[in-house]
Length: 124
Image (cartoon, rainbow, N blue to C red; front, side):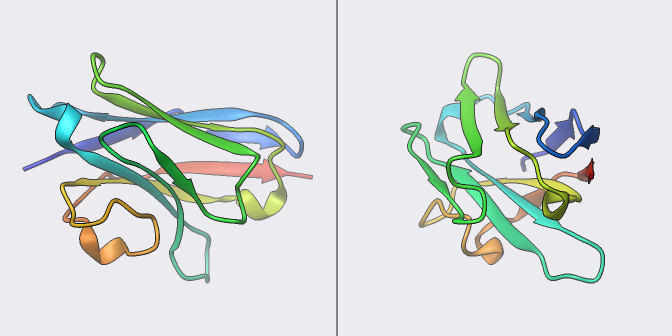
């Protein structure tokens, strides 16, 4: 089993930056696909980005060119760096980890292991 642990959320003004992290203490971290999802109050869960074992990343259109997802295999951690934050980025951000058939942010059902979430709040 995998146990993703998020950290780094908080409050920031619109236009600001923030980085959230996801640590998975797994001996074979290199073989794990990691994805970020978010959910705002009253809204459906939304996929944000996913990073595959080779470091390739896919982004949702809503965050492309503003968010950067990376991974540090030695530190067993993935980092979601968020620039030019908007109020609509306000949500609980969840890290998901697994070894799915397809490493994607488009299908939350492919992930069996989820963190508790970290809140990101962007004010005007």
